[in-house]
Length: 467
Image (cartoon, rainbow, N blue to C red; front, side, top):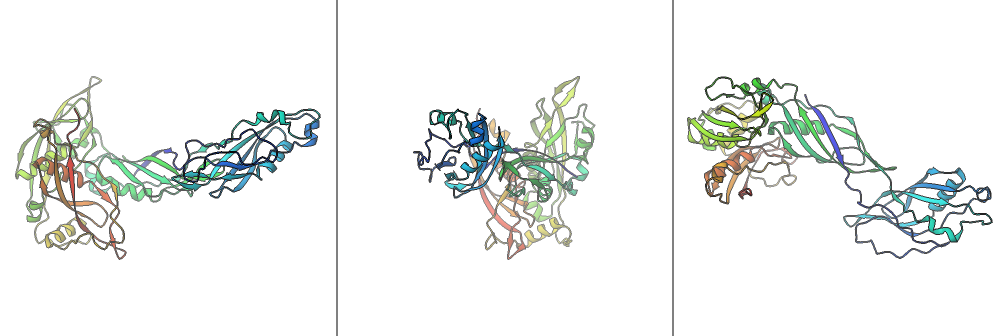
């Protein structure tokens, strides 16, 4: 099960919304202003007339401020107008009648006209003996119309996602952070995953988000598109820190339970060395490391590996991990640990279980039956990508720049699988690149409406982090 947390960042709204009203005159012509046909900016008054002061209100010397709320569409026409506030109903009706006759050029965004909602303040100043608004006091109308206030989109339904079965025994807490537009109907459109505690949480989070619904954000009376920044959390299967470490094959250096327990926050699995997987070779690796007082992984050392490639894959994966540091007497402390990584291969000749997509994918790769990404219904679109971690071993070895080329399979569900190092200027770059790619997720590839797996390759460049 999962839950959600979210906040909102307004998108699709102009940074400055307001209409400048220059010193007016009755039946005024359009004030001079720059042509905004190509420049992004606020809606602007093209022509306007001031309201007629209601005679009875003027006689009674009743004045005050009114606010008329209007929606100006993409053509510059007022499609809706209402009295938002009025010191006296008669003044409100007079203001509303006048504003409805105004003409606008529309607001512009990305060089395209957009609808916008404005609040137009108008002041009625009582003056004896005048039957209309006194020209000598017209400058009192210098208050500018402004953008109506924004009300954020609000959740209506946020059904949870299912905790991924593949992680259930490992008891990892899950967090998926996403960014998504929310359209004017309150629907998430094209969410992008920007971070996750483990790649296996991404697809369940996307499945949950597809069912989320919101009341749309409102700029005054106008529904507007916004951008939502939020999180989907998976935490109902999590155990305590000691249980989580044990479930992930992590002990103290002597194989016993560690004296203090950091908590995994970000984890990645080692990639399967491609040639060994194709051969059906299983194995394991033991890696010593320290979780520092800040939660980072330090002092990685390969203790043993049944095949060198298993050790390199395990080292590259652990470099990406991050922990909540262990506590001792109220202070964060460094803790030395040992992780055992097991690689259990799909036997050569294994029969594909139609319910086991991994076995079917490995068999297809061995048979060479996975084709290239040609003739797809749409271009391949990533929804989550994580950059590779620059290898720690190379930080102490001259900090070279480098590159690697990785071939991988995008499975029918969109997950990147079976990364294969085609080339690398340094071996460490190859394993770091493969580890990153193995966490990527794409929109599920389709050909003729049917889900397919495709084989792709990508170059990845490495630049050492700044000192």
